Length: 320
Image (cartoon, rainbow, N blue to C red; front, top):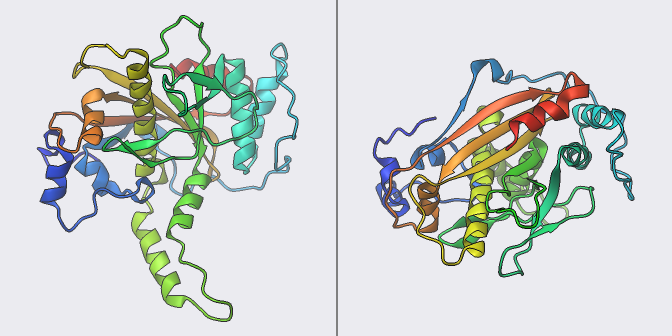
């Protein structure tokens, strides 16, 4: 939703906090609600035709193997059946690691690499992850120039020549909504009581807190915004590391971030979220005292899995 505070987007984070002393506006991204989106002037935008049905699709368990093979063969790029089979796997399986594996194969056929961020290297050089099996990549959500959270997702970037400028490459992430739900529940779960005792009050508090941070529409979960911001922050860091003497960024500078999302109750399509995030918006998080007019609009569209044969081509046409 759009901000209810007309001047919020021109105020610093510290000013916003001061105006709402009884609210915890700066909290863990998994606990974000519409209030954080309003305070930081973020909103979702999508075609009504793409709006997911609240009840989703009928759930049917997959009969596919639950885990990728331990030594997964590289996809035969000359095979016309490979993209079709991997698309069918993504649409049918309910197991997140297998979805990560299938998408990695599809994107590899379209010229994308699964990448990770090596924080131990000062210049922030991209490092390839050879395995196609699922792994958590290192993207980090930063606040006040400090790491606040490392979301678990797969990160992809287009292949490029060694001499090509790559400051905008780290822009595509993927995760399954079940992983968000699991991480959120794990964070709020009360500690296990001693054997033989009951923690009924803790369970009651857990359900109350979980209901408070569970979005009314899962397709507009505020946590998705933090993933897109993390990708933009990573691009910004990478650009600064490669250009130590570059000029001060302009207010018109943008970082494009894209996120792919699947949901077991909405099984006929993959969801694509895209945002062009102004560097002035990132400055709000880098420096809590920073003032500036900047907002963030997240565009949402769905890409149907069927027909399976051309899904990867239709998806690749939307990625940049």
